[in-house]
Picture 1 (cartoon, rainbow, N blue to C red):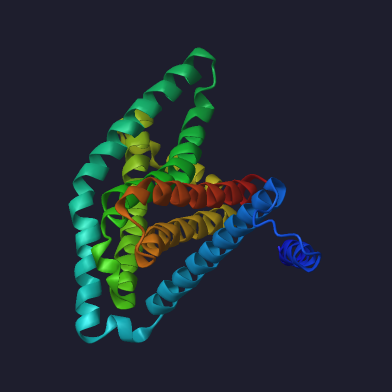
Picture 2 (cartoon, rainbow, N blue to C red):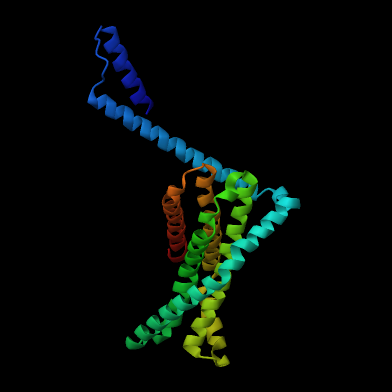
Length: 265
């Protein structure tokens, strides 16, 4: 970029010194200037995004945010971000898990692989689908529509804490709910399947897998808490909501890919 500036400036200076009175540059240099300007605007935008994200994260880690009036605001936003979403999200995860469980059990029975069905269900739903679904649900229902709370750094940090807490809470509760539905679908209401189920769960949730799941959920919560509010702090127009969601989905996809590498490789 610096080379392009020096090149274009040297070319214009040489043309002026040669006495050429042409006020229009060549089409090639015009395209170079436009490309140079777009690159600079993009770099400045990226740096501003990282700056505002670091600012929100620093406020979230500040003890003063959780005391006094700010603490009351944080607790209120935690309730506002979690309580209205519990019913709808529980119904959604229950219906989705029932459909997926029935499909997997039927397919496993047809191919004589019923002994692996529960393992596949726990790995697919609890480890992969539920955390991503919780993050997306909180983002659509809370983070992406809370632009007014991000007018100040304290408000943005309080909103981020509420969104992060909602993602963690919904992910944990829905994981327990889906595990219970999977148990009932396989063993019924009989308590005799508890030893086999707990043994299978222990074989799945190894220390490495548990650590990756915890880190993935925390990173999902951080992405949902910070990424949508960065655009609000930059005062982007409302029509940019699709860009904010695309940026958030890209961050979630990156975290998911890294978690897959950590779990299975």
